[in-house]
Length: 158
Image (tube, rainbow, N blue to C red; front, side, top):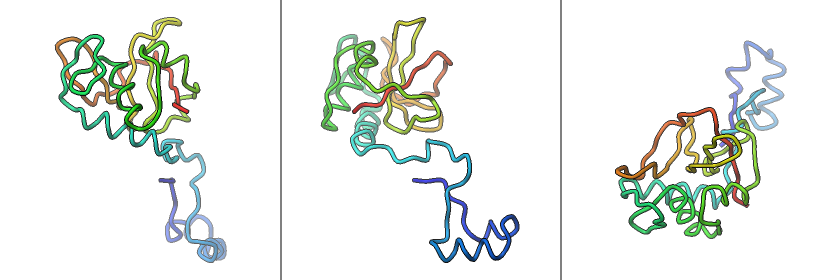
């Protein structure tokens, strides 16, 4: 999905001639400063996100990678494997394998890595609106949570 401004809303800003020109060439344009969350996610990333979401409520288990129990990196490994991509086992290894991207470039399905210093300790799958699907800790379940820290890095699975 792309952020768009429709022609009628432009009339007051752009003037009738500019708006008519826009209408003649398709009726919409990208909004200046549109956020990158509006960019389309790669198909495998969308599929992995949907697979992770489908595991909502699955219990956390240290070292588990599905299909019914997961730790954090086990969930991302499982979701991406089902989407046709391979990832290494641990959060740190997954971070090392992904293409590192800025927060402003993130799209749904990208991986979100929580870190202390240079060490990654947790991973989830970006769901949009500053939220992730993840398997947080012992005693918890796979769930959608708000990103709670500013100490995060983003990675895109290639």
